[in-house]
Length: 137
View (cartoon, rainbow, N blue to C red):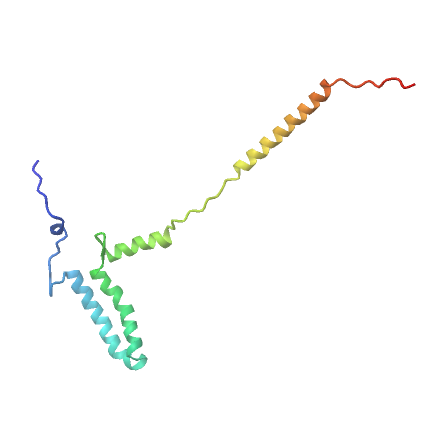
């Protein structure tokens, strides 16, 4: 079978739509503009330009990330799902819990050892000759 090697950058090729952006990038940039421009125009008088500028950054950054952010070939929404699963849904810290079964077995073993030791002590007492007390004069 004949195999044709394709360079990696060709596999990642996305068709450009408008202004050198892909369709996904263009839609996210348009959505960010549609949200942030009115927010600035109507919010600068109420909150001031400095505060509204920070609010626009906080609101616009995730919208832009949906179009431009890629991590290991994953789009932003897949990255968020993996991040959510790793951090909150399926935590990676596992707690070690020792099962109490060992303690029950240990208790039985200790009891049997005590019984054997007591039996050995009784056997040793029986084997030792009793001292005869001599007649005292």
